[in-house]
Amino acid sequence: MTAPIAAIILAAGKGTRMQSDLHKVLHPIAGRAMLLHLIDSFDAAGASERVVVVGSLREQVEVAVAPLGVKTVVQEDQHGTAHAALQAKSALADFDGVAVVCFGDVPFLRTETIAGLVKRLGGDDHPKIAVLGFRPADPAQYGRIVADSDRRILVMVEWKDASATQRAETLCNSGVMAVRAKDLWPLLERVENKNAAGEYYLPDIVTLATRDGDRSVVVEAPEAEVLGINSRAELAHAELVWQRRRRAEAMADGASLIAPETVWFAHDTKVGRDVTIEPNVFFGPGVTIADKVVIHAFCHIEGATILSGAQVGPYARLRPGTVLEQGSKIGNFVETKKAVLGPGAKANHLTYLGDVKVGSGANIGAGTITCNYDGFFKYGTEIGHGAFVGSNSALVAPVKVGDGAIIGAGSVVTADVEANALGITRARQEVKPGWARRFREAMQAKKAAK
Image (cartoon, rainbow, N blue to C red; front, side):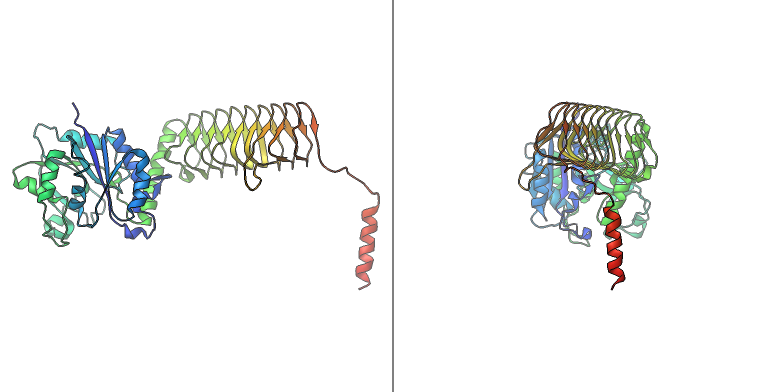
């Protein structure tokens, strides 16, 4: 039987290198805060308790995690990582399972790794602590782990306190470790701050366990999985890492990305089979794309559902609430918002469709807009099945255009148009033969006289 899991996520630091008024762990990757990516992984691993240790900018973090039912505890003064983890004790007073401690800026920690770390505590060698290690391309100032051939940790030390020999070690501490709760609290309470920084270090619990004659072990993970984010440059790199992985997944699942490096997905973008995505397409959150859809170049799509056989773009913007049903088409320089296009409906050029329902087979001419806002309230427009709206028309909501109706080009429609009727509101055209020639001659004579 798998032990219950509690996540203790350390997010009390200021993250000053981000140079931001937004808490570091709330900066987004693929449209979702890095902290929430991490919480998603713990949820998928079956964590029954999630506790975030907050401090600086605590209100921001509390607001972000409250809808998820995540607990927060406050580290009023930052005295080190062991001191931070200890703040979770009261929130987990009744918890009897394995606590996994990690930093809030490791959004790529995988569910499988969390589960594997917890499972390692149940090994035949009965380790007291399981630490997640990694071998970075540049070990820099990471804490070091010295382990024997059985992966038993002999020494774990912060870089500031490491000897030259220890700094030569390439196995580094990710800051993620699993400990049974009943063992964690006594160890944390024994940690001292006799070190170069005068702080209470979380890795020191490994040293204490070793002195007690207990075993601590290391489990290795790829560097990309425990990538920490402390600056804008590192955030941009993390975004790139995530996007590369997601592009590869989309193509492996049967989508064609003509220029993969130019397509940007959101954390929850769903893409079907035989979908073609041309260059320079950006997906915001909340997009679902069914099979056999074509997304042409330079489109921005967010909060939209696109059903099979639909086409979008180029240069289209689909905003939240857009639904394109089977075989419908949104063309170049068309913007939609809360717009539902029925099967086979088309808006091919230079159009704004907001708060509108468009029936199947309807054709929306170039330059059409739905005037959905009067400065105070939004109103809806309904366009019937098989209707035709001529170019450069304005539909002033609330208004209905019936099935099969035709709106003459250049019309401003302010009243309902019944099914199969012609609606036209432009002024009667008047033609004056020879007027243009006489006007030019008069103006040229006037100009010559000056």
